[in-house]
Image (cartoon, rainbow, N blue to C red; front, side, top):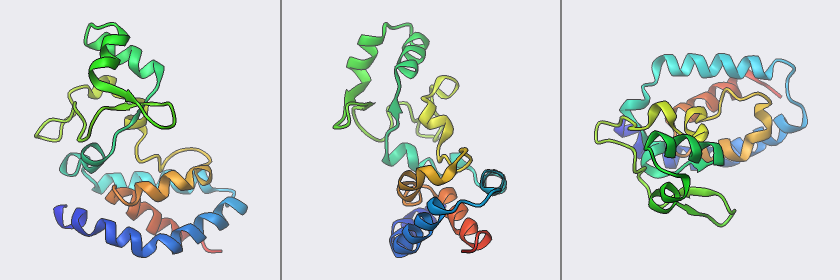
Amino acid sequence: MQNMLNILPKLAKDKHKENKDFFKRLKKKPPKQLDYIMQELHDAEFQKTDCLACANCCKTTGPLFTNKDVERISKHFKMKPQPFIDQFLRIDEDNDYVLQSVPCTFLGADNYCSIYEVRPKACSEFPHTDRKKFQQISNLTMKNVEICPAAYNIVEEMKKRIKF
């Protein structure tokens, strides 16, 4: 896994233009069965991908925290939302709550998440490759293939499966 993480940024960079062109065509004319295809590719990839062996998303990026996430997680810590925000979060340039720093504060040395049961929605849905109307999140997917080996593999399989 570490070898893949070492080469992933270069692989993603080498495929950037190809992926950008692909997603542009996908947005214009998504196949009727796109959601079904993406769910199938997502499920197949995660049958062989162990996120605990990687955790690159947690080590290199931080999720957005919705107000619901803040409420749920602060309650988990038996805190009021504002002290939780003050201790762990900051507001980014898009006016969203994000972690004060990465790697994620809640990531253990064993790659386990200490708040897994109450983790942010953005974490539970990552890498978003099984999302409905997948073609609408191409910019997010382009970023995710740079940090998530599973997302990279899913996009590569998707390009083989969907021909324009």
